[in-house]
Image (cartoon, rainbow, N blue to C red; front, side, top):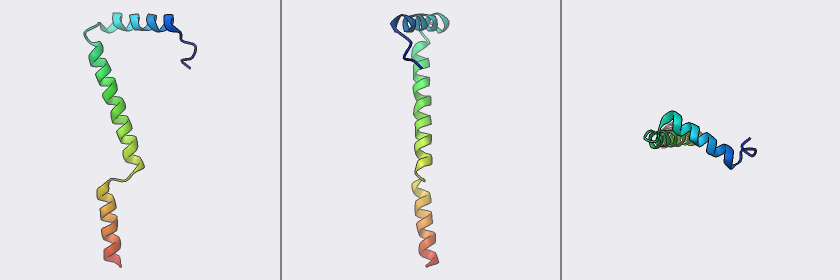
Length: 66
């Protein structure tokens, strides 16, 4: 997808972004984007593994049933 974008195209895109948002807002946009990506990764990881509380509750129920 991005393989066809060369350096001139990327520089043009960067210039357009700077014109639209301004130099002062670029760090805020980058920070917000980074936090969003981090939150997304954390939510994906938490769905893969059940929280520790659920594991302990399951073990406690199994022990009480026995």
